[in-house]
Amino acid sequence: MEGLKTPSREGPPWEARAAIGTLRALLGTVVESTLHPAAFFRSLRPAGNLADAALFGIGIVVLTTLVQVAWVFVVTPIPFLILSREGISPGLPLAVAFFSSWIKVLSAPVLAAIGLVLLAGIFHGGLVLLGAAARPFETTLRILCYSTPPLLLGLLPFCGGTIGKAWALVLVVIGIRECHRANIGQAIVAVFLPVLVLGGCFGALLWIALAGRILFPG
Image 1 (cartoon, rainbow, N blue to C red):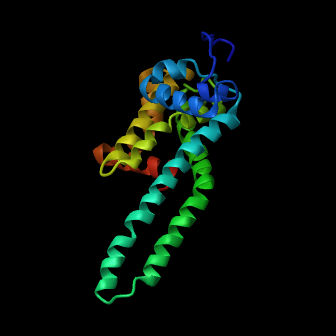
Image 2: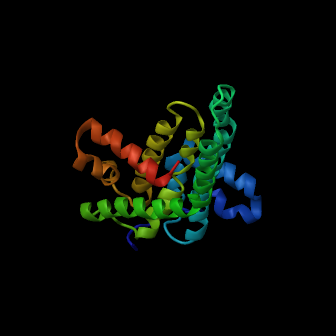
Image 3: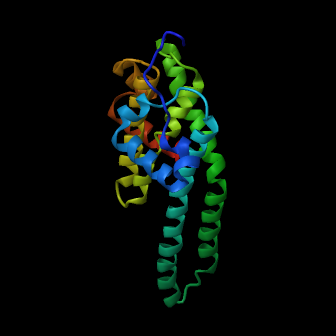
């Protein structure tokens, strides 16, 4: 919108990777988005380079999936080897485990793309209902794509995945506030509107898990 005059929106390092290099751009974007989200989203262009943003978001999800599958290949054979010592053939279940892992890897880009668009649609719909959608859907999708880095915490055992998904949703709230110029209350309601529908603490935990599952089907 013309009324939204914002200071220098130069975009994230990822969108300048041709000049600074892919690895440096990737690491810079991950660090800035995760640790300095307000400044990061304040400088994020609301439109343009959607393909770059999608590539980043999908890439983070796929990278996390690949590492998790690698762990599966390392850990999965252990109980089957123990069973084989007891005279139980692990052939079929082991083959099924490896096959399902490859299916997960091959489907990860498509599922990630669908998940990003679906979640962005939910968040943007909430903004529209609140009258806080100052920018188009593309802006919300860009915000979501650049909010994916905390999902890398899913590589850590135990509660890493849950913390990463919750952190990613917090980044979305900050991104909506900075890019759509919504107040913090509107941003929170837009992101956690399904929580309000589900109700209470159980709804909050369920929505964090569901959002992470859609975005990161691992």
